[in-house]
View (cartoon, rainbow, N blue to C red):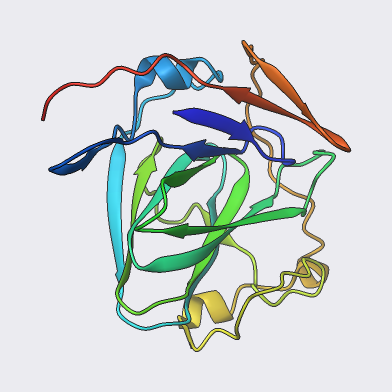
Length: 214
């Protein structure tokens, strides 16, 4: 796995390293030891699967409120989606800034969404499915959300959503509620490698590859 930090601190694109042979390929989606190298020491306690039959279906943007904030690991296993995260951490220098990436069943990327981020996606193909790993169980009554069309966020999508739930259509606008963010727990990270890119720094860690027959 190669972990590439986005310009939103603590959010990572996880580039998988499949082992390919005549049978197809084998790829590891999670390794506790490898994720520890970027400071992730939590346990995933819930795994969800979302299936979307129609193109341009929108889900999001969702987050859980303290003390049930969660980290998510997102992988598209079929079809294609445009995935979005928004920093909603109180006091964060990138508060309400967003990051987007295309995830698909064909590419080998995942997205690690840290505590204090809202998450959502727009399907770009029919029959698009995703798998989510969660560090906290879903807790009714402690959920929050942002409107995908909130002008404060300025989210640009490749197409207008055609299917949106009633719940997602009625999250309040930020200016209506004077939303100032949510408080999360912070931890210090250690990185083995820092690669410098033009105009900004990103940290990338690539551990030694190990494969088993399966």
